[in-house]
Image (cartoon, rainbow, N blue to C red; front, top):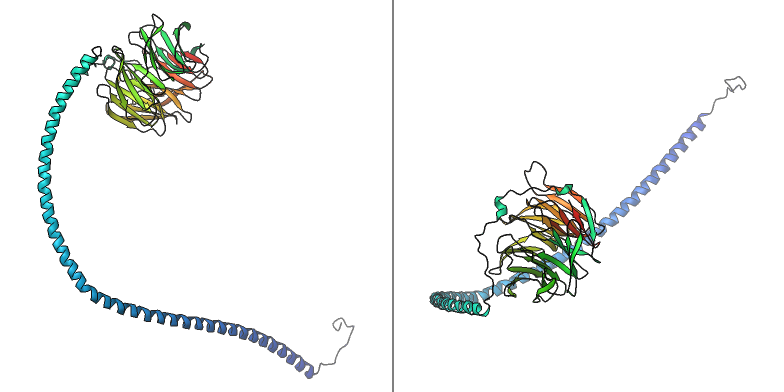
Length: 472
């Protein structure tokens, strides 16, 4: 207002007022400092109390340590006195130990002498037993010949497989298509076989019957009835005059096709029989069963010649290695075994599957075999080197059966997902790569079995939809 000219102020403020103002400011500042000092003093008091408590704690801990120290010193003194008492005892025990070691050495020398004498006596006893056993075996064999004069002789091992010297065609199964589907059973078709000389197919079914069909027309020729339960396996005799069936009633039957009647019934298995297969000479039949065994049947003397024991679970399929005395078995114990039917000896066991093995197949030249399991895994085995050749994954559905094409390089799998999967195991083949090369679709339900024509011209398959298909 003075600057605007509205008020004229000439009076000066007395110095006393200014001094009072400065004193008031100083008082306020001192009060604030006093307050801060009080707070700092309180904190220092708390710190002092805390340090005092820690000092008391450490003093108490120090006292306890001193007490423990005194106790340990007393224990050490007592132990020293005990050790002084043990010295004579230790010296006495040392003398006893030395005496015992001397006795032990003497006993060891006597033992070695007796062991040498015992070994010599065992050799003499073994020689005597071998002589006696040879005499007994010769007597048993002569008695067996007298008892079973109709027994067939096992073929020799020097036979040549003609398929090994003859180049076999590689079948392009991935290009096959379903030509015809036939329905003649009321339940699932479980196994298929083909006549060795004529184009006649045999099918086995869960409806307890087997049937013969003229192909490719699909005309029914014969129906076989006689089993009391499902039929899981079927195979033609090499001469084509008979057909063998394996059933859930625990029997294996050999049927005369000409007379349309049952010629032989084998009932030595104690549980269901899963599969059967003829030897290439036709004198022997092999079968596999839920009773953990496979049996070799002599068709001339009509008796069981031997039983293959070694699996710890159901033997799901058995096949002959062509032109040999060997059979391959696969089992629910995840193993595949190679057997000599003359000695019933397990020559090799193939391991690699992680679940039950459902099926096994051997190529025509007998060099490779394939097995499939419930996880959908297919393993191809080299039978010459006894090693794993290649592995295919057809899962996650189970693979029920497998088969080879004539060349032994194409594997066809019957899968539970209603498909037929085709794999190639021909490494270095310029025409196709190793692995899955195709899927054949045609069945409505799970495919139970597949069968390749020895010439590689067609493929037969059976399914849970009660039908079997003709692929070409």
